[in-house]
Length: 195
Length: 195
DNA sequence: CGAAATATGACGATCGGTCTATATATTATG
DNA sequence: CATAATATATAGACCGATCGTCATATTTCG
Image (cartoon, protein in one colour):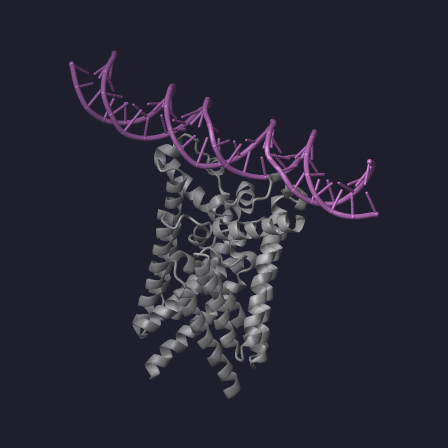
């Protein structure tokens, strides 16, 4: 039964942080929603709230990374991979009534100390995502340098699109930005292959 | 002396929210840093914390809007305007030791109720910024529809770039995304004028 | 002066995260 | 099988922080 409690706490924490931000969620919130007893927290997470948050964020990041890998792997052209990942993100948004966006952004903006483990995990996530796009773009024929820049652009655009989508309560923005990026990727690849 | 206290409270609130997020800043924080006494808060802001936060965010938005207008107005080509605004954003980031990014994003992600005045102000800010870019792009020759899409892409990219810059503690990302967008704008305008 | 506007910090009910003491389950041992 | 020893899980006390209120100063100005 222990694994259940622990898992539920992580899941609930992840959901609540996405909804209200890192500092917007209290232990009581987490305990109420997950139905876990208060005392169990420091048994499962001796590091306290920060340890719990770290695991919750890691879970969210891993899930996102898994989906991104899948989208890129199943696509013939990176442009299609990007679009299908953006579509998946849009789906999460609507399914969660615009609560779930990027698992990293709320942590970065709620300002963990620059030295914290949380901050490191955030940066690592961005790096990994950029690398995945970059590799896909290189495979499609782009030069490493150009691929790196485009990859960065893709990650930044998605981050922004997710925030705007939440504000607008519409996934329009995600779709549009995805299309725009796809077009940019296609012409970039063409230019290289053509020249 | 009243205006001074009030203004200092707003300024401090804006700064702290940027640093730690909406829920990460307490009244005591604001009062300590602004040097204002506790009781004054509810005299100047009968609406309590939310009223203060609303004004603080509005101040941040107005400032950003002012600078954006200036950048676009002083530039011959919208691409140059975008680049100079991104450069201004990068400057704010380094000057504040990576604390100051977008005044809107931390509010959106800390989840005000979807009905709140805060949420409305966030959406209004995004809309205004997109409109400014859009008009500039239309003036440069783009068709309204295309201009709208590009404008959205620009806002999204900047939002994302600001978050990534904070995480990386480097403004590289802002510069790179700015350059990428400038190139995209230039070719878009050329395509229309050429065709 | 006297009245209205503004400033002040102490107060209390509630909530925050942490920790120690206790209970329950599991396994080891005679 | 009985009991001791250990691992797992829980309960709730603890104390500082938080936010809004209020009774009282202080200033402003007719």
